[in-house]
Length: 136
Image 1 (cartoon, rainbow, N blue to C red):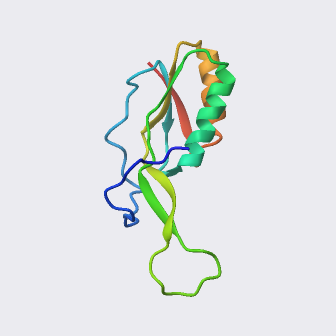
Image 2: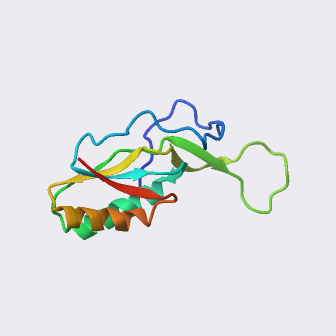
C-alpha cells in the first residue's frame, strides 16, 4: 500500500473542515484521456486508493496506462479501543489524502471510451465520495 518513506513530522493536527471549498490544483487531465473526478470532500485512505487501482488494472487486463494523481501523506493517529482518557496522542494508524471537490483521482489512456468508462465506474464504487467520469 501507499505509505510515505519519510515525513517531517510524525503526527499532524487534524486540520479544519473545508466542506464548502473546492480544489484549486489537480482539476484537469494531465496524462491520460479519461479520468475520475471527486465531487465531494473526504479523506481518501491508502487502502481505498489501492482498491481502486486493483479494480482498474484487473478490468483493463494489462491494456492501456494508469496514473494515480493522489498520494496519502497525511498521518492519522488512533488510540486502541477501551482505553481511558489521558496518556497522550495515539500512534500513527494510517495515511490519508484529503480530497476536495474537483480533484482528479485516477487517469487512464490507451483504451476505448466504453472500456475506460466501465473501469472507472467500478473504481468509483471503492471511493468514499461521489465521483464523475471526465474525458478530454
